[in-house]
Length: 290
Image (cartoon, rainbow, N blue to C red; front, top):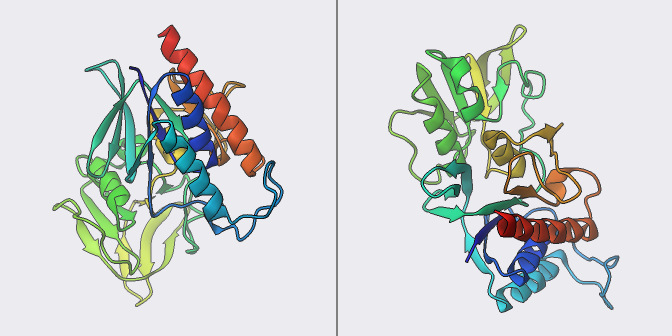
């Protein structure tokens, strides 16, 4: 049976899972317990079809998941750090911090654009030493000093991509506790960050204690990777910070689809469910034609 892996367990991801499973595919949904999205924070939802009484976002999420489990959709908790084409079986490999999953098609539904930090200099130096994709930009930092901001598996994965190229890679946890085991070659700095500074482009990081770290580039890998970060690593076309899709939710890469907040536009449950349905159906069509 053809396999579809869906990244994200919000309305878009679960809707995609329902339609892909009904279409005959074996479906696995991978989502992070750390990245619950905006819906779970909603106190009451009363503008969605079929709800006689308001429900919380958390309850609506659980109703959707339970319905998908009932028809055989598998749900796995994990932080997805990369998606890549695998020559071994002519499909895709979805990598979490602990496992690798094979898929014939992948649907990105893990929410909106990358996470940033309210630290002076980060927005100002985007594209001038601030990056959100190590595998995309590592080549430009050969034998240079770089830093990765983050404290979990996503940050470790980004740092590992930089280590073969950079002269030194420093992990900046910004006061957070390390979650997992970082690569041994990393330099670790746990101090709180005050600013990213430079003249025209990034030249240093300033800590709140006043100390400085000279760097040529800073990579943000805060929390877990969202759909936009994963798309960028694969070479999926973006429109600003949104994933570019056609009317069938297909990206420019065959077998890769996207749905929900990551595609931009209206951030509502109704839109996410519709796009998820389109993506699930499109994935099944792709698998049948493959």
